[in-house]
Amino acid sequence: MAGYLIANLTIHDPKLFEEYRREVAPLVTRFNGRYLVRGGKLRTLEGSAIFKRLIVLEFPSLADAERFYASPEYAPILKLRLASATGDVVLAEGYSG
View 1 (cartoon, rainbow, N blue to C red):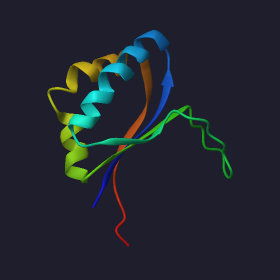
View 2: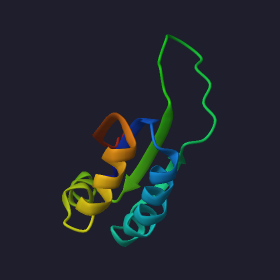
View 3: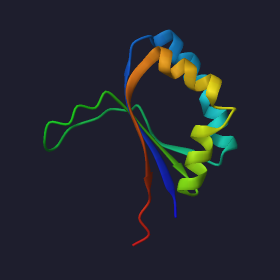
């Protein structure tokens, strides 16, 4: 069952965040992940959700998503993201229904 890493970010340093984007994309691929949503246009249909920059990554499993996030390869790249943006990041298990 697929696993998802979902982030809702507010970018504070666009230049540094662009460096993060360049460095993280190849690593996502190395961990068999793929972008489903990468900061495109958003439109709220119900409620008062406050999304800034939405990112949804899909991995083959939740364990794969966890391995990516906790990997030593991601640690220095994550520092770039933490220095350039704040927000919420969650891991979610997919539905096999």
